[in-house]
Image (tube, rainbow, N blue to C red; front, side):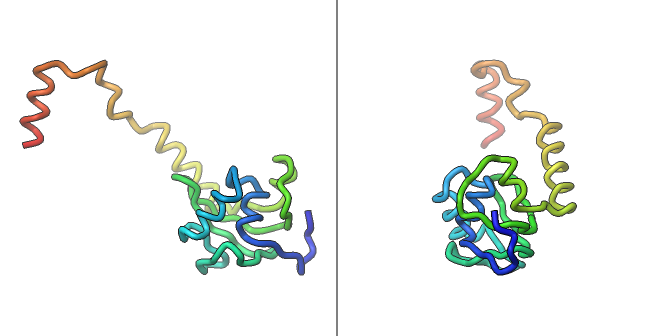
Length: 129
């Protein structure tokens, strides 16, 4: 891990090394898909990231914003990866609120048990028409 202000590495490598994505190719796809922004600007996978940059990205339903604290282009253990960034307070609050909403949301199929009966199927067909 390098905390030198002049240190830099590619954004796709950094996201992979910080353990936000399981593979480097998934990180590259996220960057190419426009799901990653550095300091508010859309980037390409070869864009360099430096300590102090704000990186906003989404990985599935989770959106995060972190401040780069260290640079590494090698994937290490989880405790080392957590030293590479600092998550913003707004990002933590939004992530926890989304987790609570998912936890409290009622599963649509929770009231159903098995296949629909003939009566339920007819009601469903009438509703669709």
